[in-house]
Image (tube, rainbow, N blue to C red; front, side, top):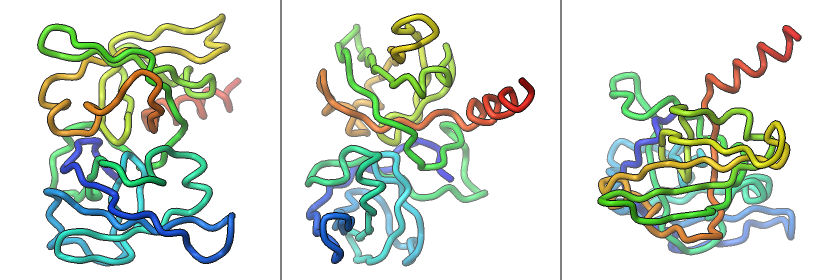
Length: 208
């Protein structure tokens, strides 16, 4: 589990195809940036742009993870050399500063707007139809591994038939400490819905 509070911005240094042909995944060599690695062991989990991955190699300044083809198909930003948001798995001794995050990407969003508003920034993301029903005013959403609060939801079509657009306010600290500052209109982003919303939807579907 994670909190969605990014601990450091790292960088994917290299992307190497794994053996197995076109259906195989890749091995990422990641510079950990300012992420402390002294307490990280092989087999530990680290969220990379919101996707939970397992450490398979480690050095003093970086680590490697293997990403399956299925994970590559369901995420964005894990197949090229670029900056990434990093967070180590949560321990029971830590503060829950964001919200409970599983590190399982539920779908991809599309940046519709990203503009400065006073000292902050407004980020508007289009969410696909299958995720629209989980988004609500003042609810939680994870964008590229960052725990954020939804300020506004606008359905696109009756009953969110074509998905929705949700708006987020990004304070200067979030811009400075994450890769969200690199987003532009048209960028794709990893989305994870709130765990509570997922369970509520399941309970309601069984009660119907």
